[in-house]
Image (tube, rainbow, N blue to C red; front, side, top):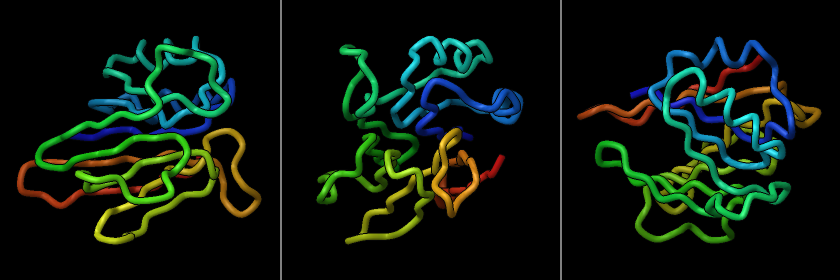
Length: 145
């Protein structure tokens, strides 16, 4: 399974992004969509879209936290990274910092795809591919645009 992971669109994204993620099985948006109608563009390419509420979003029915499981891997999705590792998860995915991340902390993998529209000065715009499959290790591949 290939999951396109995006964060911090802040009202816009490069149009090439839709083409780049068109083969995704799912799309996970880690918050700060800012313009909810943008999600329609992602859903229009086919795969289901999961989204969490960012600190710049004003959509009361979006969850602040999503707990998902794909294969045997338990994921915790939240826009602002939690101060402590959540219980009962293997991977934390977050946005907010606009800085890509892939590190292991207290036995939990922390991942951030960076920012697709307003990256930090040190990092170009990016998203990531998350891959999971039976009997395979978790894959994480950062893609710059």
